[in-house]
Length: 130
Length: 278
Image 1 (cartoon, helix red, strand yellow):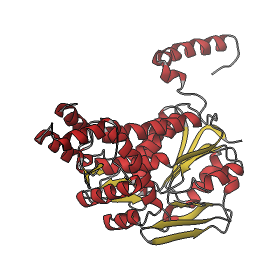
Image 2: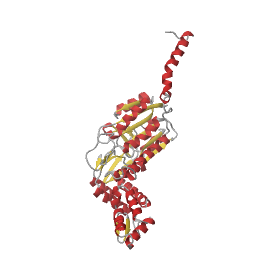
Image 3: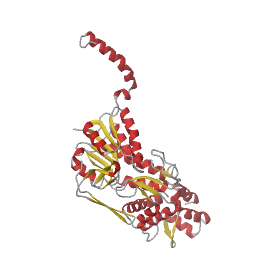
């Protein structure tokens, strides 16, 4: 385990993913950038060692509700990078605003639940990259 | 019996979303014609599509338009294909969109044909119903089809390649990949696999590749994955609506050059033998 390995792992992921909560430890969710910062600050401190151990084990943290985490990540992403989409559904607006997408994710609607499921797979994939 | 190597396209382009799909169809039509296929391009109007199908009896019907679980609409959101007895419920952002299909419309017009609808949700009930009624195969989506995403700036012109802030290209390009394979002589099963591969190529660019740090990257990858997850195909996956991949004269350009003198010799010999005169 090394700072270099954590750095490579963080750089392997999309820029936005580096700023999204991923691992739950010591009462908070840690983003990949925060984990890297902690390992850089004090690589041999218990906190950095534990975070690296969790990455080694592909562990998201005790009692992590992956559905809630996926939802939280999508809402955080929407705050960081508001997005609009175009669809071709009959009877629905063609352009769906960031505000509507936020409600869609919060209420786990037709599209929101699909995004949450994709994000759950994405979480597992991102941690597996370590 | 629908005619092999004959395709009818419904290139609807009357609102913000549909031109992003029809732009790729126009390009595909050029390629198909160059390969010797008969392609009838319509603007997605009801009468134009009806006439094209009646007159040309195509093996392939590929169209872009708005849809729901049991209905596909033509230009101007006019119902075009519909299967009665289904009720579509979409819960979106606290709003409930419901569409109940009450009539059977043109289901029998697609018997023996390959139908590909670039549209939302038609893969849920309409596609299976078309195949039950005799369509040879169907490709579509069983959830909302996302056409494009934007995080900054304005909506781009159709067929504009993606950039850091907007992608209204990869989504329909991945869809069109299926019919490219069909036009080149592939089976429906091969077409669906090619679409999956194309979606995945774009997802990989956004999650691991050269586009991963673009502001639009994470959202684009999520919505491409959403489309990929909801891509469905029914019917005969071995069906090849275009039997020959490339005309022989295109595959071996020398044959085209040789064809002229050989043709002249054959003509002259035939004339000498009294088979014909001019």
